[in-house]
Length: 203
Image (cartoon, rainbow, N blue to C red; front, top):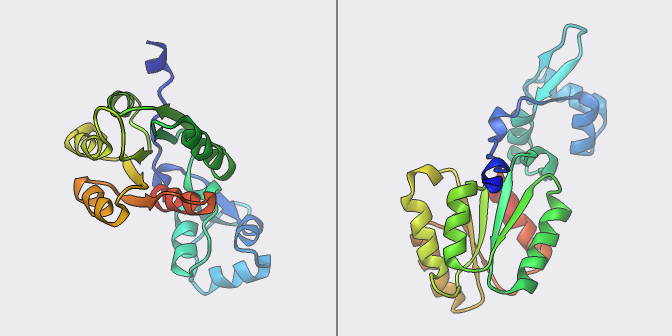
């Protein structure tokens, strides 16, 4: 019961009605505020004007602008405090590494863990996380089956899956994507590679 009370539901970025001023946009884009002003005046960056005459940019419009211009999208724009990630791996050391990477790059995200396929299925159904980072070689129910179970559940359509394995990487990649994974990562991986994979799926 306590777990149910503590469930954190996913918040889509388009529903996060947060706006940035030109100084904040300049900081994120690593340019000067006048440059941001020129983008707005030229119609390159959508904005609205407050009652005091100040320009504001909705977060979703800023994300679209950054991606269109091949600029990095910081994690503060991608996730909210109500987003969560379920880490599934039977090796505790791997879960620790993944959790540490998530805390470093996405500090607002809630982290949950599972050590086998059965627990992964239970927690995915209960928590409906934003993302499942899923090892495919699991005791009992393997990761491929977990992928299929998630995709067959109509209540979990919003859940993204980042599959990973160190075994028969290329062959398993295809199996994972066919089973419903949204991304794939071969082991071993470095923290930046993992963070980039998570960031792509949280946009």
